[in-house]
Image (tube, rainbow, N blue to C red; front, side, top):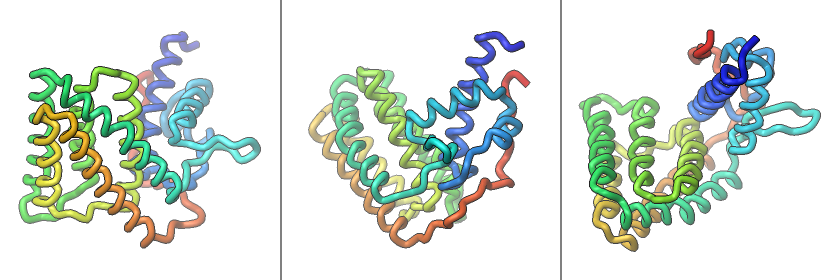
Length: 243
């Protein structure tokens, strides 16, 4: 019988990988999450999976409704605008605080994460950039920027919002900019953050986030989402660390 520590580890594993699969689209918008599919897919027990689903529901990555089970939320204008407005308020303030309080190690981390993001895009050369594989670098760059904020809870909220918006970017394929434009936009943002000027950093963040919202809204308007979304059976299975 698994120990309490092992059950906790299984639950954490399920949270991380189920969240990742929802963000990437392995579980598509509207998909029903059934225990008989979840347990073998993630190789964890029923109790850890129920705990994982409760945590993901609290974070907004799944919906739990009486008599209707657990589902992946549909993509909607209401949620998109809610997330984006919250990001404008919360993350732009975290960026301002990072610009004011970030130390030398933070600056080095921001520059290094931007360099990895840029290199990942440049390495595609003349081939089309695979934004799905580049997105983790993009996430790490924004996470590095916010890491200079002195408040852990604020950083955590920013990261959760970023991942929920990433679900929209990946599933709408909302990458309207070519490599040079994407790199240039993020370089401008980085330079403002590293200037040490909190007002400049916050303004740059708000502009950057506003541009992202504009692209996502345009893509969402142009899409007709499937009524009966299903799991992507070709997506790789996850293996439990305790299996």
